[in-house]
Length: 317
Image 1 (cartoon, one colour):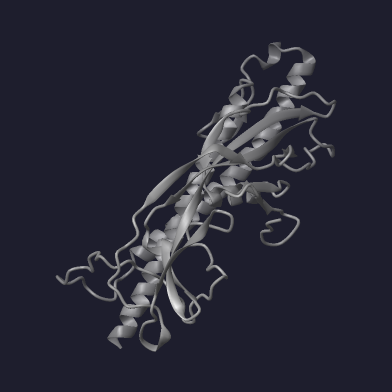
Image 2: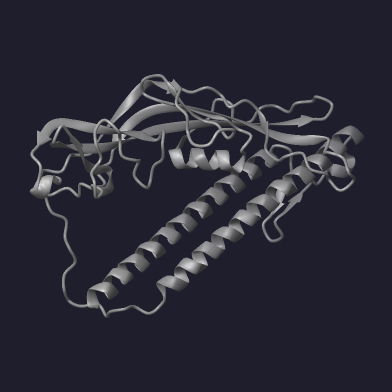
C-alpha cells in the first residue's frame, strides 16, 4: 500500500513538472512573439500600451498624408489582431501555470525524511523500454527534442546482454559531453512569404488593405551531445547491446517580416540577414503559430526535413 502511495506521488510530481515546463515554454514563446511584434511596429512609430494591450498609432498620425495615414490605420488594426492572439496565448499559459502551482501546493502523501537522495554515480542512466529498441530502427527523440532536431549516435562497441537477455548491467563509464561546429553552416530552403494573420473581415465586410507577412529560413551550425541522462540509452542488434547517444542539432533562424498593401506596396524587409539561435521545438511552435508555412529543416548530410502542414507528421525526402 505504501509503495502504491509513493508511486502515485511520483506520478503526480511528474505531471506537475510536465505542466510547469509546458507553461514556462508558452510564457517564453509569448514573450518572444510580443518582443518581435513590438520591434516590427516600432519601425513605423506604432507602440504597444502595456496596460491595455492595445496597438497605438503614431503620435503624428493626423499630420500624415491621407494615403500614409490610412496605411498606418490599417497596420494598427492588423497589429491589434496579432496582439489579441498573443494575449490569448498568455492567458492560456497563465492558466497552465496556475493549475501546476495549485497541484504542487497540494498535500503530500508522505513527510520528508532524513534519508539522503540518490546521488549521481559513474553509471549512466541508459533508458530502454520493455521490449528494447531493435536496430536499425531508432528510438523516438528525447522529450526535449523532436523529429529533425537531432540523431541517435550508436557506439560501435557491443555489450553482452544482461539477465534474461535484457540490457547490460553496469557500472559503465558515462559518455562525455561534446560539441562540434559545422562550417560553413548548412542552410535549408525558405518558407516563402505567408500572411501572419489570415484574411478576416475588419468590421466593414472587407479585408484590411494592409497586412503583415513573414518568411523563415533555418541553418545548421553544429552538433552537441549534452550528456543528459535521457540523452543516452541502449539499443539492441544481433543479440548484443550498444550505447546510443542523442546528438542535438544546433540551429539558427532568419525570420524576415514585411508589410504588403492591397495595391501591391511592400515595406522594407525586417530581419533579413539576422540569424538567431532556435531549437527544434521552437521551429515546430513557429509553424503551429502560422500553419501556412512549410518549414525546411536542414540535416548534416545536406538534406532537409520538411515540416509540411498539409501532410500529417514529418517527411524527409
